Length: 290
Image (cartoon, rainbow, N blue to C red; front, side, top):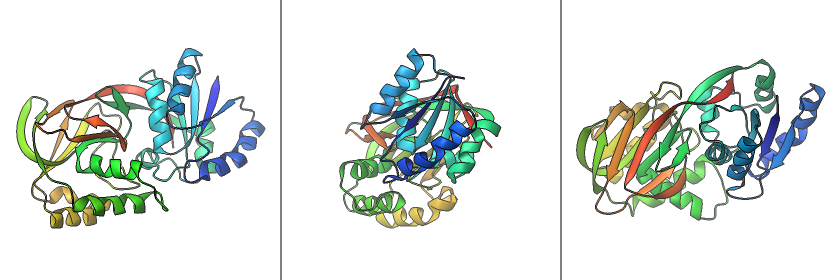
């Protein structure tokens, strides 16, 4: 099987490079023939993915985090490629949903003993996502995380960005259509989940499964600062879904429009503003899981 490994040497503040340094010999010793590609900056994993499709690579092994995976998937698209995931970033949220082991050696073992799980991809305004895409507060937080300079990565950085946004974010009017059901809300956030987690373990969409052919949507509106803080305390366990001014739906297609542009993100990467069109792409990739 023609295999490329895609390594982001700066993922996890250098953790991916250290992980790959000790894993590559293990792969060779087990007889796997592979070609290694190191990402060289933002967007490069997407380019590698496109070349992999052109050269009919059958298996891609990602050594990095959700950002690396997001780029690679947007290069590969829904081609049914087989993916191995070695979690080595700061969040590793898709691996968390799929129960891929955090320990690199255990994750590596799935290349030989794992089973293939066909997963869906979400698609919003032409961008694929594996985890969650959304509009509103979380997109504003993602913009803060991605454009600032931070001494600490991961969940702590995300939480600090949430606190910063508390003082400046305003809920704005939006029109939301969920499989034909039309709603008008002063939107706090809309999270469309193909998988359960983002932000390094925040279980925003607890019911989401990446192979059920649907998007699970969490919509919140008119949240005050105190309500945001309360939701933040509950989100890691998924208990925020019981809060007022919040609903959940399972859908295939979502439209969001607003008179004032609202920030839009896919897997924590800011990709523009509303209007936004979300949909599901079933059985797009195969991922090796326990």
